[in-house]
Image (cartoon, rainbow, N blue to C red; front, side):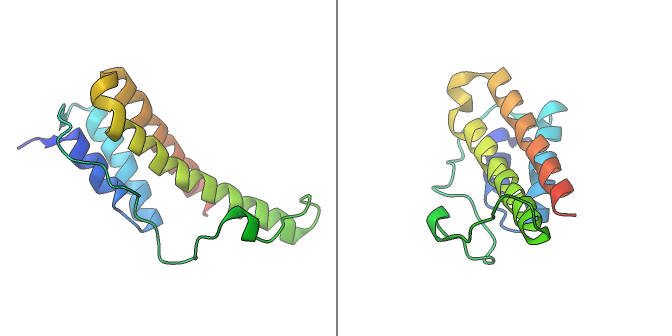
Length: 128
């Protein structure tokens, strides 16, 4: 049985562990590119993607200031913020493909799944 593209995307979105999510996003993109996923959008996208239990996510106005990057602490905080941005971008790209792909077409899905794979690679590089 061929898995649908929406089911594969949903599964990746519901993966909370960051490393597992990176693997899942890249695997969805790879399987799509290789024609292993069927064009079906029966799987509903989750209201919100799964996220790790820690660290606790806070609104931006409750986060400590990073400064201008002059100190080592400021540079570490900047890299940390970039990693968070890349992690959220994985979910955003997957959600775009899964939520709007059926109406937008094959190229739209291909593009956003490639973006998800790229963001997963960026996150993996930043989290080393």
